[in-house]
Length: 388
Image (cartoon, rainbow, N blue to C red; front, side, top):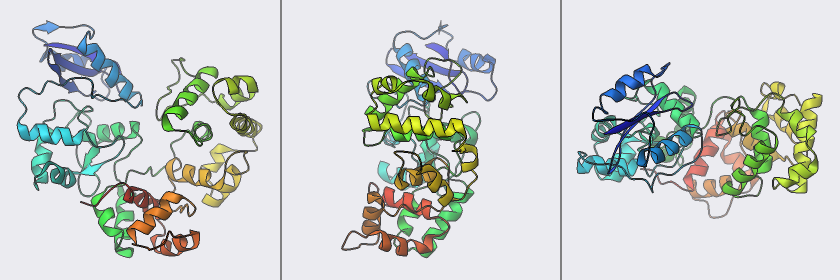
């Protein structure tokens, strides 16, 4: 069987394949210079040592490497060699592959979908998963939102894989929030108990890039926003520069704001930005370079002060500032009362006859303090999830 080592941001990734498809994925070993992966691969490539992947192996290598760079990829068009897998394991792995990127489900919920009530049996099958990442066992957690991981690095590797996808393992902050929400809001409790929360609980450390992406993506589809953002990175000399990553969770250079100030409006318009968005980015960048908007200070400021500072920037309203607080600064007690998804989610969860207004949302969520961000996250999930 051919086997190869693939360079990724997490370290060397091993793949083994046959003429029928991908046979095995070996996740990176912590602090590996390549020797540990070479030894692991030597157990699988006795008959056909491959220095670099080719054919089907190359297709898998490219896709997996892109995944670990933070790109959103699909594997449905590539084959997996399922020889030796039991029918039960095949059902478990197929169900796992349907879990959305960056989200988590419990072993019990996955067992229910597979058609068995034995969460332990599902856990055993996933512990033997030969193709992690493709079969995303990192997205399955225990009832408390944590859970181990049999790959090198254990739970740390699991957390890294989720972080690359924009998710996180439920930590003590989330567990405390879930206990509180389930106690004070019986209507929300079934959802809280069945779905681990994947909200960040701390700043992502790259706020300028995040704000630029938020402005770029306003009123656009995810695909269109990503395309324009990629063009912007190229125009700023970031994309293609090996010193900086450009996928999810990537870091921009410290002079990124200065680069935006230095380019003219025609360049910004040329990547696909509207005149209003180009003006917003130039205003943001000018404030950052002049020091009137201190993003390092914002990270340490109270929520309302953050909102006040951000909404002074052209094109940033309160809703955008609240989303940045929740999803990028990890603030636990933000309630975006004007968000339509929040209002619809509360109407569904509390079985309200009419769509609640901001005053009703505020009143009903008062008991959620100090975890209103996490309560809000569950309202969004209520619109696309049914408690197990």
